[in-house]
Image 1: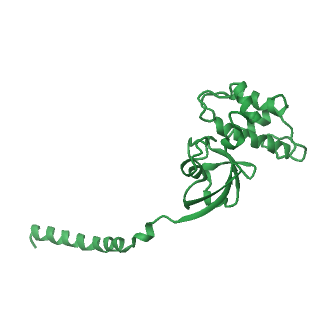
Image 2: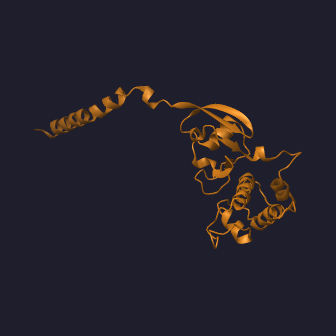
Image 3: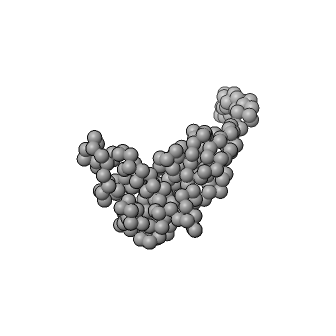
Length: 205
């Protein structure tokens, strides 16, 4: 066999070998790649909301993109910075790490639901008083997380620095710093944040 004949035979064999996968991919109907949507009903900031969502939509994207509640921020989108923290049924979670369809019937509170410019939540007022922010990007998550932290202490939920998990939970700077460690402030306003939350906890706000 000549060199030219060998090359032609090789090219034809390669084409034939590649054809079945191509045909198989082409045979897959488009419907298999279409997004699956689902109705999700929840209560957001005290108001009922029903959304038709792609089942892959995170709670964060449902709030920001579908309900236009942009106070909740998308920082890392990997659950590492805490900027997206909201309260779900009274407990703080990273909304970027959970799917919206998992919260059918849940009560969700975002920073917009905590207070208004005319009637601030005590923590919002304390953050302003103590300059608990600089750029402000992490602030909604910090405040929502702080609400959750104070509730955890009231419910005697222990943390990793609690000396006796069987005893009543107590408020301290060490406890506060540990419980708020999932919320990162890239501007470094941590001492002011601690002062703001401490004032609210002590009833001085």
